[in-house]
Length: 85
Image (cartoon, rainbow, N blue to C red; front, side, top):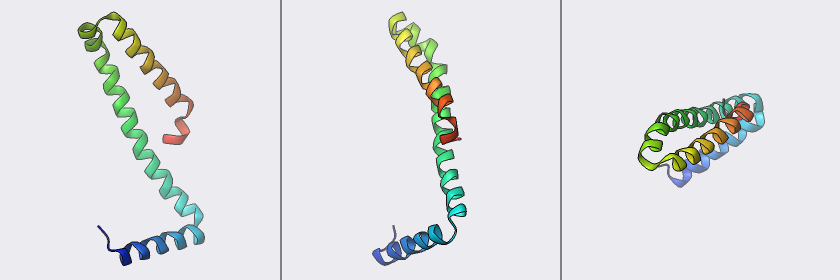
């Protein structure tokens, strides 16, 4: 944890960086979003792998619902792939 003074300095530095070099700051922001996308992709793959077990353990209806949710997720990830890649 940063002290209040250090936090204030950090915010001032980031504000100055954002104003002085917006292209650099945008690249850093894009990298942070990319990390979230990788976790989302990993979670999606893990859920697809769990689909057969869910179908066997919870039944066909639960498996079908699970599959529809995962298909919707896949379509949305494909549609908005530029935001999280």
